[in-house]
Image 1: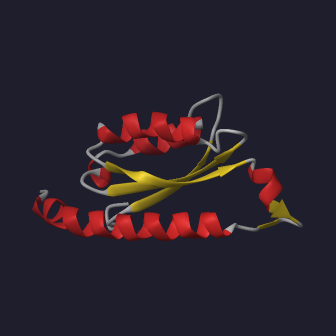
Image 2: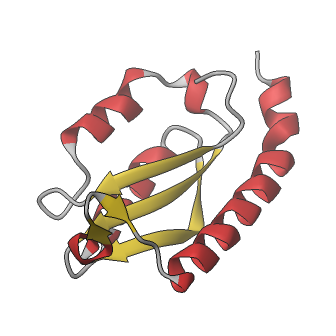
Length: 118
């Protein structure tokens, strides 16, 4: 965790929020999360997991993380899986490109803050 410059979290929506295992992962460490950008890929039914992402964003800011505005949302994800393989659409691919480009920009911008951290 400490060596990473940024994170992409893939999460389903669970009871209109994030799954307990994700909450536990965030709660398990503190300093290792600080000053790192975070992007989300979410999936679920009609909302595509967006409610989970909104709850997670509130939590990660208390860990001194920077959650990105950009994300990849996969509504009705079961319709995108055939024979056990996920088939992204062009829109998903474009969203992922935007997210990863922005994640890199933030990781570079926050690098001095991570370096100055004791």
